[in-house]
Amino acid sequence: MEEMKDKVAFITGGSKGIGYGIAQALGSKGMKVAITGRNKQDLDSAVKTLSKETGATFLGLPTDVRQYQELQEAVDKVVEQWGQLDVVVANAGVGIFAPIDELSVEDWQQTIDTNLSGVFYTVKASLEALKKSQGYLFTISSLAGTNFFANGSAYNASKFGVTGFTQAVMLDLRHYGIKVSTIMPGSVATYFNNHTPSSEDDWKIQKEDLGQMVVDLLEMNPRTLPSKVEVRPTQPPKK
Ligand SMILES: NC(=O)c1ccc[n+]([C@@H]2O[C@H](COP(=O)([O-])OP(=O)(O)OC[C@H]3O[C@@H](n4cnc5c(N)ncnc54)[C@H](OP(=O)(O)O)[C@@H]3O)[C@@H](O)[C@H]2O)c1
View: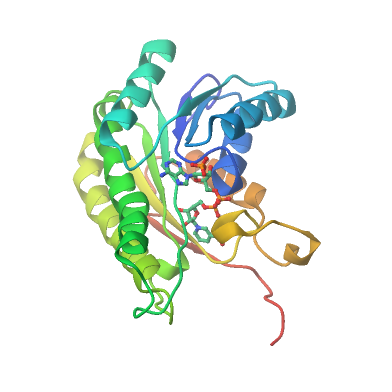
C-alpha cells in the first residue's frame, strides 16, 4: 500500500488486546479505523483513548462476529461513512482450554463460531469492498494453528481452520489484486483467556509489536506477499 494516510480499516475485536494494538498502529499512520466488539462500553472507551493517542478518526461498532448479518451491517456502515474499505483484520477470538472429556458442547460452539465462522463471516461481509479497493485482508490465527497441544482441541481446531481457510482464500483473491496474510502469534500480553496483562508479561510479544508488523506488511512491495507469518517471543522464560 503506497500511501496509508486516509485509507480505511475494519478490525474485529479492536476494543483490547491485539486488535487494539493494530488499530493504534494504523491510526498513527493516518488511517481511519473502525473497530468492533460485543461490549459497547469497552468499545467507546477504546475509541476515546485511541483518538487521543493518535489524533486519528475511529469508529466503534458493537458487533458480534458470530452473527453474519451484524457484520454485514457494520461493514456497510463503514463504506457508507468513509466511502471505501482498504484493510480488513479478522482478529476477534476467544480461548477456551479443557481436556476433551471436560469440554462442553457450548465451549466447542463458542470457540468455532467465534474463531472460525467469525473469520469467514468477516471475509464474506467485506469481500465486495476489498475487490473495489484491491485492499489487504489479514486474519489472526495462532501458533496453535500449526502446533497442537493437550487441552487445546477446540482452540486448535479453530486455529488450524483459520490457517487453512486463509491460505485458500489467498489463492482465490490474489487474482483480484487483494493481498491476504495470516499472522500466527505465540504468547501475546493481552486479556485473552481472562488474563490481565502485567509486568510479568514483559517477555511476551506486546500488542504494539503486532501493530508494527501489520504496518510493515502493508508497506511491503506490492509484488511480494508474506502469506503466512509465524511470530513468537524471542526469549520465553526458562523452565
Ligand atoms: N493473546 C495471545 O497470546 C494470542 C496468541 C495467538 C493468537 N491470538 C489471537 O488473537 C486474537 C485476539 O485475541 P487477544 O489476545 O487480543 O484477546 P483479548 O485481549 O481478549 O481481545 C479479544 C477481542 O475480541 C473481542 N471479541 C471476542 N469475542 C467476540 C465476538 N464474538 N464478537 C466480536 N468481538 C469479540 C473482544 O471484545 P468483546 O469481549 O467486547 O467482544 C476483544 O476486543 C484472537 O483471535 C486470539 O485467538 C492471541
